[in-house]
Image 1 (cartoon, one colour):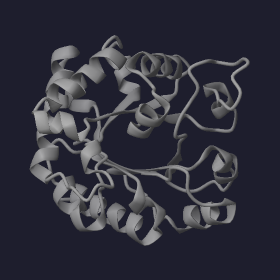
Image 2 (image 1 turned 30 degrees about the vertical axis):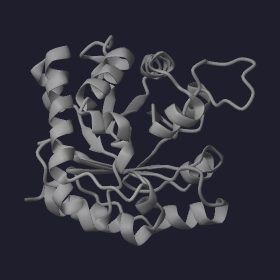
Image 3 (image 1 turned 60 degrees about the vertical axis):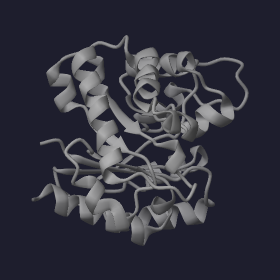
Image 4 (image 1 turned 90 degrees about the horizontal axis):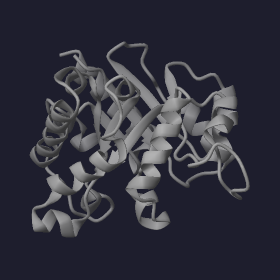
Length: 253
């Protein structure tokens, strides 16, 4: 059985004191079946790493395409590694939309991180116009093919996929558990075809579409949903801890 991964993406929120307080409030279990991750803003990473939180993986929300050089404002993978960060988000929908990160850019970022031994949570998903046209499967699988399709099965052991139905994030619209499961199953089938059945079985696929305490139990019970990449609910310790508790309960059944 694949373990559940509950990952909190704090995005650009909070100050230093709030980040410390939130990190201290997370109740991460000492349980093999559930892994808790948090992705604070860059400026808080070093401080939170030094807190030596138990049973929590700390990752970065983004990473540069280059190893070093004259790239003002960028943060490289070696910089992150030097402060104890070994997991990064790549391809989040907000990076694609606001910073125009293409599949080629994300391919470079992914390959660079994997070459350095880092783990990648690779994000993919479709906007509302694609969903309405009924071409969501083609759209999402094309993102995967162009950005990670060249990886080896061995490299895929360092990759987790996060499916984000962009149309259901902060819009008031919601994806049903059945809709989420359908896309997760589609992605898992792609993994089997692109690589092999072992890769398909072992790769974690997280749901990133406004997972909250009131829908977590149903979503996490779906056979191909292996956890969540959580935005807003991860900023409230009570909500995030509730989702962690649901994941623990779900994975013990």
